[in-house]
Length: 121
Image 1: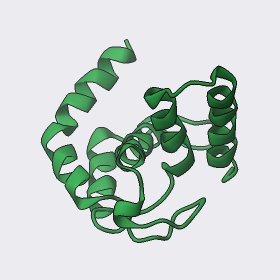
Image 2: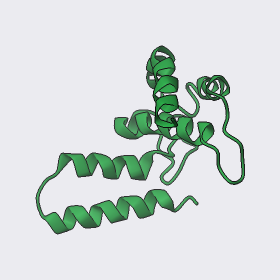
Image 3: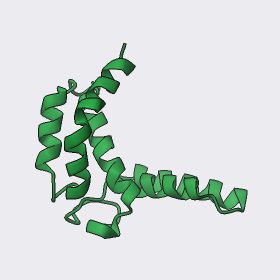
Image 4: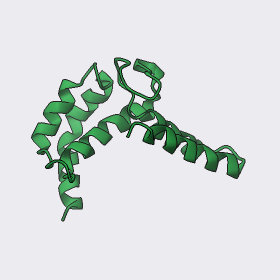
């Protein structure tokens, strides 16, 4: 399971190498794929990066990834409620997640719930 970050980054790097021109969006996508499981406190993977060493795009993606994972039903678990998911994410402020990103999340999480409900209709 932990290999998906590295495999995703390698796949995107292969595309970047093949197009042979600078593409900021692909580079951002590669960083998101590679580093979205890094944690603010350095306990994540694949590199064990911490704080501002984690690319901003990956710090943002980490919150979205956890929100989606928790609120989506999987074969091995039921979906968590929006409220429970928000509670879990807020507990990760300063450990799993960038405190500044969580401050923004606190302001917009209701919009995420509305969007998720609209997508599931």
